[in-house]
Length: 127
Image (cartoon, rainbow, N blue to C red; front, top):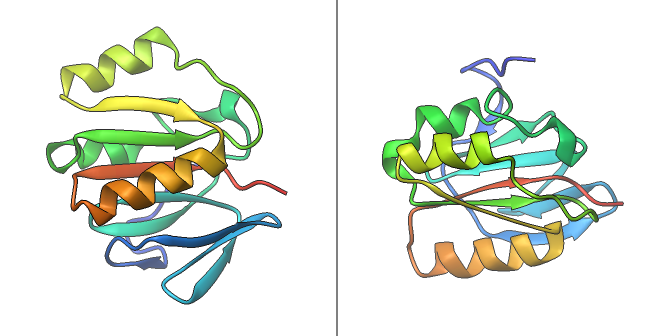
């Protein structure tokens, strides 16, 4: 399902303050569901399990690749191996993808934005 450019979003990046119970807290707001965090905005992300992660679900990452060095993928509570085609497509745009469970992904993302690095995160909500 395509994400409308005028869909509600936070128009900047922010640290994730809490996660769990099916959502996230960031910038004193809460969101139920998964998130796509880009250097310039945080969007609701319709992905609920790792096998839904593909070039189409990461369309905004591909569109904003010039401002991203690393994409952290939080895979919920599952372990997921990034498909070779997706890794290579991002590599061609000079974006490194690193997949891990959502908890470690949130912590890694927060450290990297604290270091003012060019990072994005695709985070699947956990129960």
